[in-house]
Length: 291
Image (cartoon, rainbow, N blue to C red):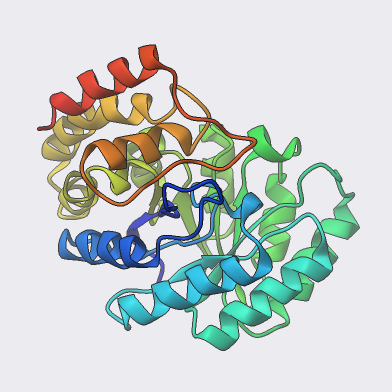
């Protein structure tokens, strides 16, 4: 179900002191992404500033996304937390709203032990909704080891992992160790999409697809069509944009990029802050290559 290019969408805010949700802008952005052929949508991930959304806002964004998408592609809702009870609340809400699955980051800051991680993920998977784990040690301070991922992959409702460790050997070992399971590996780093596809990955949960969705879709589809050279060419064409998305903490650059493209974005919420002038100039220069 969760294959291809799934943009981790930004959450647009209004230009006011409270940075209220921009629901009209959210819908408009979603329609644009769908018109460009993306294969799924991921609301309320780290790119969507989930850490600064209230419970109510979190549910509104997921609900509006599901209603707007209206079954055209799968919606994989971010419902992770470092508090298992909170993650259960988010996951139940996403299920009730009609999400096709949930993306669950490994608990950050706490650094749970192995049995705690197993119980955390199984508690969510037992809610009877497809769960995609999310391994991003740079944000959580803890890597999900291969043997743990392979163990959890045996749960019928744990259907995949978003891998953002940057460790290509680990990616290979996860795919090798789950080949007998109905288990997907998705890239969590745009720049790693092509090599992960070559190892047997299923696609990418993408930041860059907020800005250049059609090119990201072409990268995936050319590869799956066996047009490897074309996929490589698109990869290198997109590489400057992929790098530019991380000239500052995600989602600061992508949100500014979306705004510069005339889409709904608005400011980021504190403790994140806007790009400085030098980085805006750098980002604008990169975007000009695609205009």
